[in-house]
Length: 623
Picture (spheres, rainbow, N blue to C red):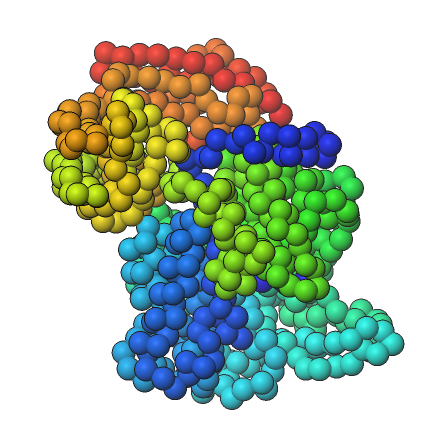
C-alpha cells in the first residue's frame, strides 16, 4: 500500500453528506473490507511469533478476524505475496521471510496460513481476497538472506533495481535499492500469472487483489534530480510498435492485467479481480485535484482497466480528508462515475490508519463522514476497504471501531451483486423452526438442495421484524449473516411485541434466495409457524439501470418458477442487437449486463419472453 460520473460540485456533495447523513437508512448491500498486511509484519504475524508453534500464529490471526467481525467487516484482503514469496504452500516461490524470519523456511509444524485464513474468514461470513504484490521482489535489497528458490536468485535477468533515497534536499542520501520484476519482459509477466493462477486453482479464494505497486514511484537523488527507472535496454529491445516510453510502460502493465483477467475468467469465473491504485488517476481529474498522477508516475491506467472490464472492482487509495488539493468530496464521486459508467464496483480505499498516525492525526469524524458521503452520493461507492486491520480498525483509534459497530455497521450487510458474473439465486432454506428457552430462543433450519446451476448455498441471512410480511430490503431487519444453520436470539420480545423471523440462502456471489417459511415468538412463547411463499409472486421486468446509460446498463427481472426464458435487445427499427438470455432459469431475480460499446446513441428496446409472459421496455444510450 502507498503510505504516503459527471462532476458534482463539492458544495452540493458536502450538503448531502452533512445535512442528511445522520438520517441515513443503512444499505442492505455494502462491501466492508479491511487489508491485513503481512509485509514487515504490519498486521500479521508479529515477529514475536517467529520460531514458535504455528498455533501461536493461528491464534493471532483468529483474534484479528474476530476483531474485524465485531466491527462489522464482511471481507478481508489478505496479503499472501509481499516480495515474490509465499504465505501459503507454494511449489513456485519460497516461504516468506515475514512468516518465520527466514525466507524459504516453512512453519515448524504443518500450517498453511492462506488455507487457514480462508476457512476462518468464511466461517465468519467474510470473503477473502488474496492480495498479491505483482512486481516487488525485494523491498530493500540485502535486508535479509534470500532462498535459493527465490526468483531473483534463479532469474536475476528478470529484475531491475531502483535506488531508495531518504531525507529532504539538501540532506537526501541513498539508503538502499528496491528490486522488482521487470514489467517490460514477457517472462516476468508469465511468472506472475503462473503464481496467481496457482492460487486461483488450488484455493477457495473469493478474489484476487493487486495494490498500487507497479512501476516504482519516482524518486530524486541527493542532488534533487529525478532518477530514471533503468529499463532503456528493455524498451529498445521489446518495443516493436515504437511506442513512447510512457505508452510502452503502460502497455506492459495493461498486458499483465488483461492476461490475468482472462485467465481468472477461464479457470474460475466466480473469482473476483480487483485493484487498488493510487487515488489520483491524472492530476486535474476531476477539476481542482492536484498531485501525483498514477497514469504518468507509475504507469497505471486504471480508467482503461475499468473501460475494458478487465477488473471487477476498483479500490483507489483515497487517503486524503475533505478539502484541499486532494479533496475526498471531489475524488470519490469522480471515481464512482468512472466505475458506474462501466458497470463495475467502486470500493473506496480509506486511510483509517491516519486517525492514529501522529503525522496526520485525523479527527474521529473524518472517515465516518467519508463513509456517509459514499452512501449519499449518486452514483456512489458500493463499499470501503480500510488500511489497515490492526492500525485503524481493531485498535479502535478515537473510537472508530465503535462508530462502525454501533452506528455505520450496526446492521450486517450482504456484499454487492456482480451481475456480470452469475445471478442464479440458490434455493431457499427449509424447515425453519424456533424454540423458546427462559431468556433466549433458538432458530434452526435445513440447508436447501442445489440451485438450477448446480451451486449449493454457502451462507444464510436471518431477518427479524415486528410486522409481517418481512421486508427483506430494509437492512434494519437483517440480524445475522453467516454459515451456521442456527441463530441464537439473545433478546426476546416483551409486552405485546411479536418477533417474526425468516431466512434466505446465499451463494458465493451473494445471490439471495426467496424467504423460507416464517416463524414467530412473543413474550409468552412461540406463536405458530406460517408458510412464507417460497417463490416470487409473479413475473416482473424492471426498468434498466442506469437509464440513460453509457456504455453499459443492468437489466433485471423476476421469474415465479423455473422457466425457459429469452431476453433480447432490439434497435428502434426492430432489428435484433443482442441475445442476453436464452435458456432455462430458476425462480427468483435475475440480472444481466448489456454492453453497448460500438452502438450509436439512440433508443433501444429489450424484450423478455418466459412462458406466456411477454414484456418490453425502452432504454436510451447517450454518448
